[in-house]
Length: 70
Image (cartoon, rainbow, N blue to C red; front, side):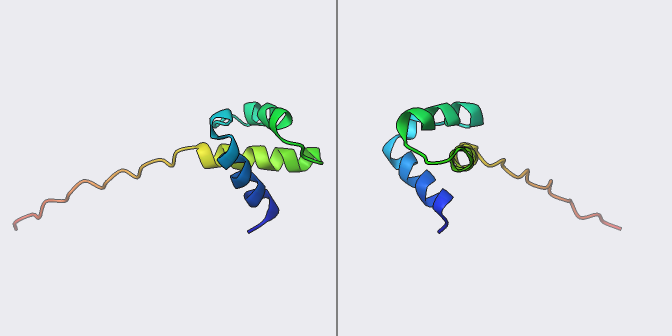
C-alpha cells in the first residue's frame, strides 16, 4: 500500500467527520488536524480522501428486451 493511501486511511479513521467530498475543504482540515511535511503530499492526501468519500454512481440496469414473435 502506498504512503498516500496509508496516511489517508489512518487520518480518516481518526477524524471521519472532518472530511467530505470537497478537495479545498479537505486541505484546510488536514492543515488543522495533521502535520504533513509537504504541500504536495497534503494535496495528494486531500484528493484521495475526497475520492474515497465520493459515492460511486449506480449503473443503470438495461431495460429488459421482450422476445419478438415472428
